[in-house]
Image (tube, rainbow, N blue to C red; front, side):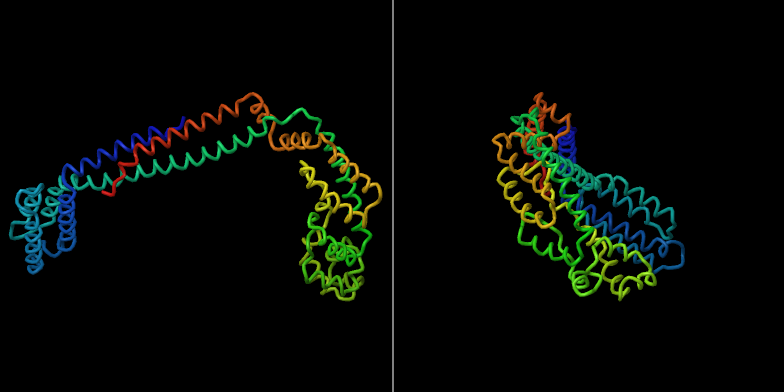
Amino acid sequence: MSDLEPRLADAHEEYDAARTAVEEFGEDELRRLERVRDRLRELFERYEDRATGTGDFRGFIEFQSQLDALVSELPEGARHRESVEAVEDCFDKRRLNAGDFERARAELEPVDEDIDRLRERERARERLREARLDAEGRIEELEREVSAYDDLLALSDVDLDAPVADLRVPIEGYNRAVDAAFSKYLERASAREVVSFLDRTEWFPLVDTPRMPADLRAYIERAEAGTEPIPKLLEYAEHSRSKLDHYVADADALKRAVTTQRTALERIDATPLQLEWPPRPADELRYRLRELRAVVTGFAPVETIAHLREVREVARDPDYERLRRAAEVRERLDERERERLVSGAVGDDREQAIEERERLREALGRYAPTMSSS
């Protein structure tokens, strides 16, 4: 259990007490007293140097006049009228010194204490607001937890002991084969041929091969170096310009085109031609296999195509979905999470999260009316 519920209760109690303290005094009276106190302090700051000693009689007169006007703003019988009058008494003399101002400030201390009721109410309101925000944040967190528990519980009927190797073996066999075949293709095919290959894959939306940047593509299509394989172009790009002059007609053009787009060339690999793990649902996988076969046939040996056929046969097996879901859960959950799912601990945690969420919602509703605008 978190500390949010007692925090809400404590913050509510503190705010209620602080609000009551203001109401007992009277907010309007406190505000009026605050204005007088603040103006007295301003007077002290403005005239302390001028009104003390014998050097500035005009300043002394101005100070006394404004002080009298301020005291008269508090009606007879107002709370702390005597404290403000005591302040005035500190200056009822012909010559003032720094000590008079110190005594006047001391006379205002009881006033400060009561005016602080306003500040304490603001501080208490802020503490309550923060406690409510934290509780609301925790409720959102608990809602996400409950949703995650629901997702886990939806997997509780999955057969975690299903022989997922029946799927993994043919898929991994194909992935290794197509990786080796494509690596050999890149070593022997010209960069122009690879550009053409990538263009053809655009007709197959389920084979998401990378697009070559326009400036690099233009260079490969027009320059003689475009007849070289991509690994050779990457090797050339590492040479100095003087050494590169022995291999290509325009070393600067190759440097500009290849060196600046090296990452784009290195991204051309077999990854878009490989199958995901865990695999897709059967219908999606069969469509992807169909497109992959059309693309891979252009460069891969018959052995690689044979691996694709093996995967296709697995996707047609009536047991495929059971195996796929088992593979998905094993990939998604670690051993501890699988144990908690099987033991029922996930369901228990879900119930605890729901109970805490409801308690916090109830607490927020209970304390909401105290957040007045006063």
